Image (cartoon, rainbow, N blue to C red; front, side, top):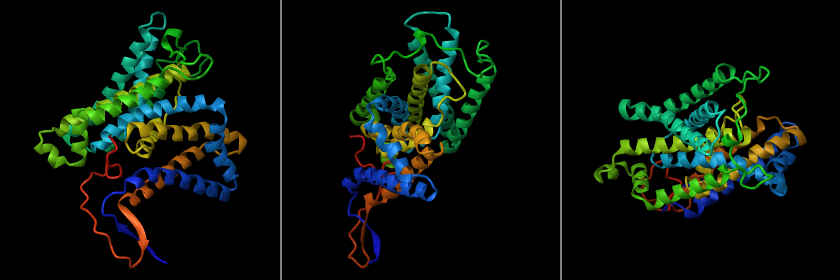
Length: 375
């Protein structure tokens, strides 16, 4: 019995939210089979990565700490994606924001005061915004594709990180290790729950997602973003300026990415090191689409991707899985998510079945799979 794809009369609201579930299940099944074929305990790997961290209450704090930066970065990216502004440079903005916060920390090492940590956060947010303004300027003034410019700037930021750690910012008392001096108590995030790893950045990330949901769903600025992304011509007739939306999207995305970098360097690490966890900016792209560009969906998606980091570390010791396996699972998740999205506007039917009358598609690629995601 042959099956074919048939256009739906209208996008399926059920499949909008079912597609991520399908993608996760497909990732678990195919991932287990793939690593079994490669000679590993594939089903044990899936259990170690996706199941055991949920069953072990001691790992929940790790999940929250890992999910916080993903939530912040993905929430900022979702604003641009809904407006067809493709900021692929969150990784660089995240690193640059962390470097800006580290610069303030190094300048205030011998100082004390409650103002130091807020100053670091402000510096991190501004650093991310400044770095995001480069591809924004190139697109608005010179018509440069923001995908290419923002993507290439990621590697500039990472190389700048390596240079500073091995040069000007190396701790002279660090026995030759390429790292900065340890931050003081006034330069590190306080723990929300004493005795755990859950720092102040975790509730701030949740608050940021809730705030962005309100702004996107209940304000004129959010309405402009949605209209510019879904119907550019209608936006021009309404007097909405595309350049303003481009700038706003990049600055919000860069600011939240810079905040995530600040929380990471002043939270779990307490200093800047060459092994600063790069990769969150790219993973956040998966989080944004898995969460359907909805801030609340992004929170749930961030927890799913945080599982791959926390469980991946355990799987390396319990199953002998290579470190690259985490990236494989993340890539499969994105692949199956994109594949499942076709079921939002198409349905599988037997070949020869009478076709349904399809409505014209006017939504942009960024919002095509997420109708009403901002509401």
